[in-house]
Length: 116
Image (cartoon, rainbow, N blue to C red):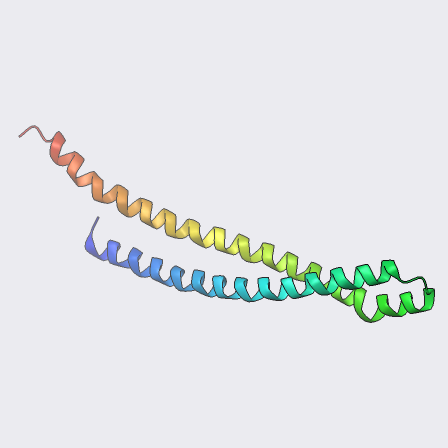
């Protein structure tokens, strides 16, 4: 592989690495927030199930349970999106490494096949 191609691929891989780090950071933050809402949603669900007063139950659902459930579900979907982004960008890194590795092996195989 020519040096300029190899350098360009390595530079591209580093750019993608920066994106992967940003995605990882965001993933960690969203995961923490998801954990908080998981607890909030779970607690309000238990309280609602344990409350026999219909009016109070409606108020708890309105103020806490439904908003927590909505946020929890949104965060779960966002985590899935971030996981997909990580998977896709990691494929770029893997493909770049594979191409570079393949090209590094290739000259040796031609040299061995040369009958001179």
